[in-house]
Structures are given as C-alpha cells and as structure tokens.
Image (tube, rainbow, N blue to C red):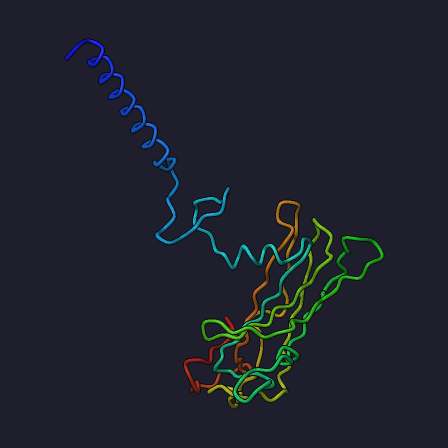
Length: 215
C-alpha cells in the first residue's frame, strides 16, 4: 500500500468519526427534557414538558380579566330537564344563579360586568358541570362572587335525584372571593352541589353514602 492510499484511508476514517459524533450530539435531548413518546408528534417550538391539554385549551378560550365559576354535581343527583330521554337538557344549568356579591370595578369604565350562563351542560367522570363566566373585571381588587341553587326545582334521572327527608340541595360555599392580577388575570372558582341538613340537628341515618353534609 503506497503512502497516498494510506493518507486517503486515514482521512476517510477521520471523516466518519466526525459524522458519527455530530449525529449522536443532535440525537441526544438536552438535559432536563424528555423525548416524545412513540407516535407523538411535537410541533416546532413545543416544550417537551408534559402539560394538561384541556387546561391549556381552557386558558386560551377564557378571556383575560375573567373568573370561570364551575359548579359540579354528581350524575347520581340527576338534572333539571331533558333534551332527549335520559340526557340532561341545556336548561339544566338554570337551577343555578351566579352573581357579583360586591361592587366590583369593571375593566372598562361605563361597561357592565357580564355573567354568562353556560350554553351546554358538560359531563365528565360521573359529574355534571355548569360553567359560568364573569368577565370584564378590573385587576387588583377583591371580587366576591355568590352562587346558589334552586332547592325547589324537581330534578330528573339519577339514583339520588329526590332530596331525602330532612335535607336540601345546597352548595359547598355560598360566596367566594378572588383577586385578579397582571400576572394572574384569569381565575377559576369551584362549587359543588351537596345534600345539606335543613335543621341544626343532623339526621342520625344518612340515606346513602353519596349524601354528605357541608364541611
């Protein structure tokens, strides 16, 4: 083997070594990140961190300077009306009332603060959800929001839709407060329907494990 061939083979081997090292460096993810799971496609610029897609979608859909008031109740408690037999109707959220409990300042002077009633009732994990939106709120103020449920309306469906003797429908809270800021211009309030004793004395025998008193 002559000297030229030896030099050529050495140069070619060095080239392959550089290519292999470069490919390995690009294939290795940066420290502190994880590669996408099999079959998952990542959009350009998307972080490798795991995130709640529904929470992200809600943050995008919910406007700034607003509070999402989420009222949930067990599917076993039933609902107010039906759209089709066995399915909750859109007016099922009419049994709830959401309003401002204090004189909150609007984000824009002269514009009323709207409280939007949900257009649909949502079902997830054996719960129904009615989501109200209070928007157009000014930042850096204490905002008190009150919620209530109509205890007189008869409910349909569910295994516990009839309120037991000695109880009434109520929410876990009557009123809650929040302060929106520049760094947190959106907020969520969660309320839940419970069966609460009507008097000071709690009935000795609960009709079901699904029925609980207010903490």
